[in-house]
Image 1 (cartoon, helix red, strand yellow):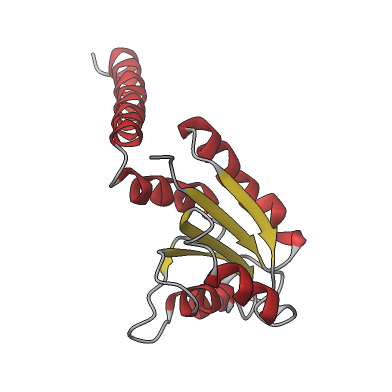
Image 2 (cartoon, one colour):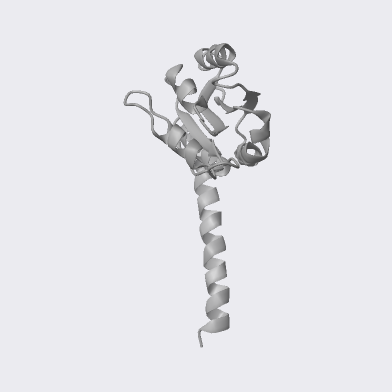
Length: 166
C-alpha cells in the first residue's frame, strides 16, 4: 500500500516562508506532499473542491496555514473527515493572536488540531505521526528521530557538566 500524501494549503502565497519549514520535515521522513494556495474567503469553491476529493486523491492529512481571520483550516475540516492541522500565521496586526483564536476555536463536531503560531515544523511532525499510525516504517523513522534529538540534548548536558560542575 502506497503511503498517503500530506496536503499543505496556504490561504495566500505570502504564507510560503512559514510553511516551507514543513517541506523539509516531509522530505526528511520521505512523506509525499502537495502544496496549494486556496483561500477560504477568496476561492471557496476551489478550496471545497480540493478538500472534498482529498481522500480519494490519496491524501491522509491536510495542513492549512492562514493568518488574520484564518478560517482556512475550519473550511478544510468542514469538507472532509481527514485530520486537519491548522497553522495560525503571524500577521503584522495582532502578532498572530487573531489567527490562533480563529484556528483553535472550532465548533464541536468539526475538529482542527492547531499548532503554535508559525509552527509549520510541528504541524508536519504531527502529520507524520498521524500517517505513521498505519505505516510501521514511518513510525520507526519517528522513533529514530526522537532518539537522535534526545542524544543531542544529552550531549549538550555532558559538555556543560564537564565545563561547570567541578
